[in-house]
Image 1 (cartoon, rainbow, N blue to C red):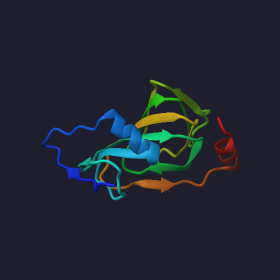
Image 2 (spheres, rainbow, N blue to C red):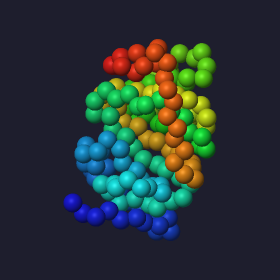
Image 3 (cartoon, rainbow, N blue to C red):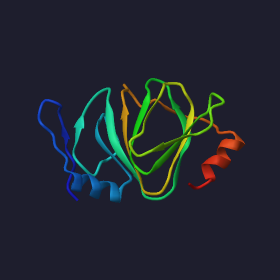
Image 4 (spheres, helix red, strand yellow):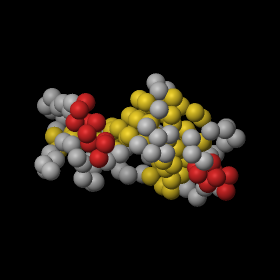
Length: 148
């Protein structure tokens, strides 16, 4: 396995589809840019205040309910089905399909889950890791366990 490199924003940077697909086949999430602490399978652009990456949910996956204190969480669905439940209002879960985009504002707690085979692109403008886990209600816990 090659050592990944951080690149600056002042040069052209290219990742090919085949490499991205190979990386997300091995590890469900791959960042394209950010101030990253976790090792990556591919090279990436070292940026402050911006994270962009992709997730490939090979199997049904429910993420832990959380919120972001400093930034919106933006998700574009490339393939499959992604569901978001905003936990601070009476809105039922939102179903997102290929081509749909959602921006979840900062300090808005939410739960999310992805159908097997779902691919997303995520974008976050941030200064630091601002993720805060939220204790889900019994109803939300049950929803998260229901495979789609």
